Image (cartoon, rainbow, N blue to C red):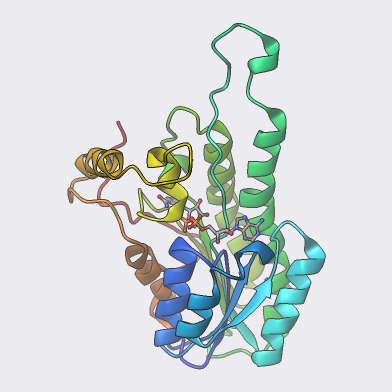
Length: 271
Ligand code: NAD
C-alpha cells in the first residue's frame, strides 16, 4: 500500500491535540487531509488548515448525515484511503455522590454522551468511511484498499477514579477492533487501534484549569510530573508521539497488521 503520499486521509477531531498533530504529520508526508471536527472548532482549526493545506469539514461524528457529508467531501479529493478516528471527549464523574442521595449518582446523560461520541461516533465513522473505501480500486497484490486507525486510551484497561464512562467507551473501541477488522478484511481494509497513555493536549487541561479557564501552571507541572513518574520512560507523551504511531498504522509499513491494539504510553503503570 506504500506510504501516505498522495492519499486522501480523513481525520476526525483534527482541530486539536492528537488529531491536529496527526493531520500535520500526514500532510507533511504528502497526504491530502480532511479535517473533520465540530463546527465550533472551525476557528481553532484554521491553523491546521493553513499548515496542512487540508480541507475543514464541519462534522459531528455522532450524526450520520454529517459524516456522509465529510466522506463525500473527502471523495471529491480522490479515493478515500485512510480514516483516523481521533474525536473524543472525557467527562469525569464518580459513580455515586457523597451525600447518599440517588440524585447525586452519576448522571446518566453524561454517561450516554461519552459513549455516544467516543464509541458510537467512532463506529459511525468506520461504517461510513469503510463503505466509501470498499468501492475504491485495490492498491496492491493483496487487495488492500485502505486503513482505519481508531483512538482508545490506557483507560480502556486501567481507568482512573471518575472515568467509568470514558473507560467503558474506550474499552468498547478495543473490543470491536478485531471484529471490525474481520468484517472489513474481505474489502481490503485494515483496522487497528491506538491506546495512548497520558498526552499533553487540551483534553487533559481540566486537571489544572482554574474556575475562570486559565491554566494553573504550578498545578500543571505537578500533574505532568506525577503522570511522568508513572511511566518507565519518566515522561508524559506529546501529540507527535501518537501521530507517529498513527502514520505507521495508516501506511503500508503496517500492511500485515490488522485487528491490533498499539499502546504508546511510555511503559505506563497507572497508580
Ligand atoms: P482534544 O480535546 O485536544 O481533541 C479532541 C477533538 O475531538 C476536539 O477537536 C473536539 O472538537 C473533537 N470532538 C469532540 N467531540 C466531537 C464530535 N462529536 N464530533 C467531532 N469531533 C469531536 O483531545 P485529544 O487529547 O487530542 O484527544 C484525541 C483522542 O485521543 C480522543 O479520542 C481521546 O479520548 C484520546 N486520548 C487522549 C489522551 C490524552 O491524554 N490526551 C489519552 C488517551 C486517549
